[in-house]
Amino acid sequence: MVNFLKQIFTWWHRQTVGTFIYTLFSGKFAGKDQFGNKYYSNSKGKRWVIYKSNIESSKVPPEWHLWIHFLKQKAPL
Image (cartoon, rainbow, N blue to C red):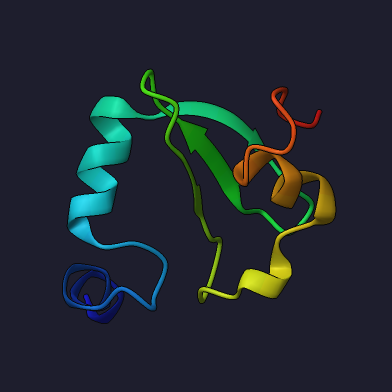
């Protein structure tokens, strides 16, 4: 129950409800890295990451960093 409330009211514990709903309806799964983070994109070209645990940008591997910042067009395998 506590984790559910954290997810609803805070953004620093994974994702908010708004991000969850946006990902559910607009997100196309692009891949998953070795840390368990999931990467998504939409038809308009927006790209985002859903972190496995607490949000920590240093846990994004270099190959996914390149993709999320549009320096590579294809998502890493």
